[in-house]
Structure formats: structure tokens, C-alpha cells
Length: 180
Image (tube, rainbow, N blue to C red; front, top):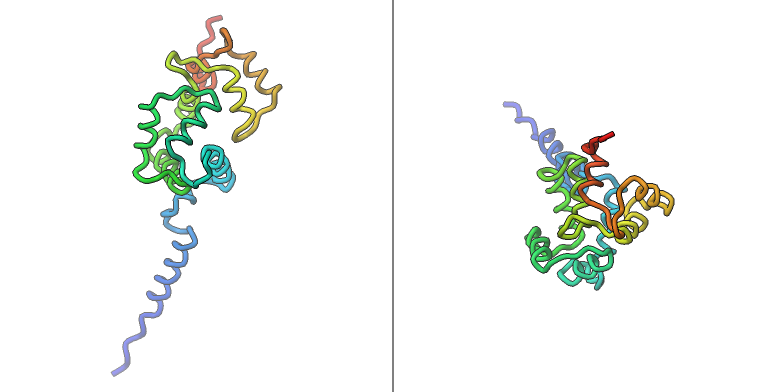
């Protein structure tokens, strides 16, 4: 009676699949696969900026200090909500996981992301301090020049050093209607 063939092909396939998964390829189980290297580098830069005490975890004090520096007024309740959004301590990997989860089920539409970004800088009245948004635009992510920021301010109504978050969001998403 001939011997049954060894299960090598299936075993080899399993090994290959396991190798693929451990390298981050294949099934997309690695949250870092959802983002480009440039995006991950920008997230890392943002994380390092927010981690004020340099302990590798973003906590209440880090959020407060960062918000204060960029001119965003956050209540204790808002900070509590941010911390509650994450089940574990917010280290860099956890932050990327949160971004990945939000991307899958949250504001994936570019328009929603733009509106949410402006709302993040707005005070309770929906106003953004010009100096605060200027600092953010020239410091983080794709850094804009002074000339770029001044052109932006030329497109939006500025009142007493503030701009409207809603106006900015509507303008950039094409929802602003020309009344002329």
C-alpha cells in the first residue's frame, strides 16, 4: 500500500501565510497597513508634540498643555471624553489604532474630516482665534508659509482676530453659496 503524501503543501502554505501576517502583509490586520509611511511619520510627529512629559503616553496633562499651546479651549469634560475614547493608555500604537478605527467607521469622508478639523480649533461660539490657527498651519503636518496663511485669511471674514469654523468648513467643502 503506498504511503499517503505528506501534507507539505498545506503546511508550507500555512507557514507562508503566517510569515505574511507577521510582516504586516496579507490580511490587513496590522493597523499600520491602513496608512502611508508619510501619514505614520506625521502621526508620530504629532504624538511626540503632544507627549509633553515624554513618558510615551498621552495623558490628561499632555492634552491640557497641548490644547493651551495651540489656543484651543478645552473643558475638563472634553478632556475626559477624549481619554474615554481609548480603552487603554494612549501610547503611539494605541493612537494609530484609534485613527484606524475612526477611519473605518468614523469620519472617512474628506469633507467630514475638514469640518471636524476646524471644529477642533473652535471655541464654544464656533470661532477660531487667527493666531492659533496660523500657528497650527505653519507648525504641523504639511507646513504652510506665512504667505499661504495670509492668502487664507484673505478668503475668510476676520472679525476681532477670529474666523468662523463653520464658514471655513463650508468654504473648503464647497457648501458655501455665492450670494452674488
